[in-house]
Length: 153
Image (tube, rainbow, N blue to C red):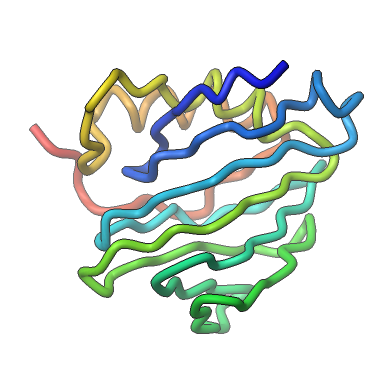
C-alpha cells in the first residue's frame, strides 16, 4: 500500500513514497520539490539521520556551518546530532529524494507540516505553519536552532 500523500513544510512539497509503517520503521522515503526560494531552519535531529539525493536543480546543504552545493546526481548524508539546513535560493525549482532512517520524519511531517490540497502551490510558511512546526519538533527529537524568513500574511 502506498498512500503517496503530499505535505508541505517550510514551503517544500513532500510526497511520501514509503512510510515507516510500510518499512517496519526502518526508513521513510519522500520525493521533495522546492519552487526555488526555500530554506529550512537550522536544526538538529537527535534520533534519526537523513540522506538527500538531488534529482534535478540544485540545493545547498549547510552542515555544521559549512555550505555544500549539491546538483543533480549528487547526494549527502546528514548524520543525527549535526546541525544542518537545506537552502534553495537559486530561483529555480529543485527535486530531490529524502530518506529518513529510522522512520521518524514521516510522523513528524504529519504533525509539523500540513497536507497539500489538489493543485495547491506551496508558498512561504505562514505563522500558523511555523507554530505547528515548532510545537511538533521536540516530540520527534528535532531541535530548531534558527528561524527562517518572516511568514507570509
